[in-house]
Image 1 (spheres, rainbow, N blue to C red):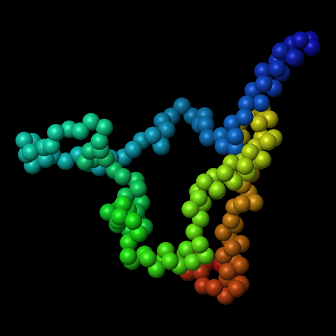
Image 2: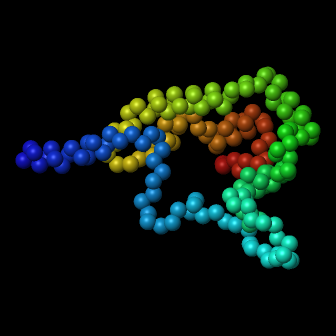
Image 3: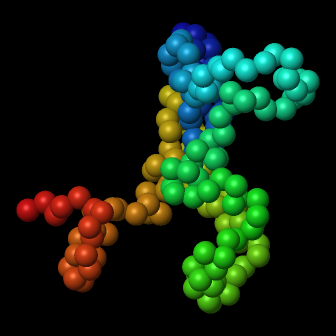
Length: 168
């Protein structure tokens, strides 16, 4: 009887030791992955098929969309200005935000600090019998409570026109 219980429990214990980190983004459905579908612009017939340029393998075509360019336009920017550095119209903003100094390695420093944080938080998350997404639990103290923050600013007398009205 002990052998049967041991043979039954051993695979469960070994499977629970699999460390997937904090995120478990697997899907249990057999349906398509909606993030793998990339919408494209509608096809257009050229004015003349003789004037078409030769195809360039591996390059973008006219129906490909650029998520980065569409995001820039959605926020009121100009996609052409991305590669040209900081436009003159934003020089005052950049000067104001960098008035206390700029750390050139900020991305690397934050990535290293976050890796250490995730390593500490994932220390005991590898022992689980069923797959669980522990990301939100680990970053709970790091998250901003938007309702509490809006109340804090309203109590201080600041106008919050873009926030939902206060619930009474």
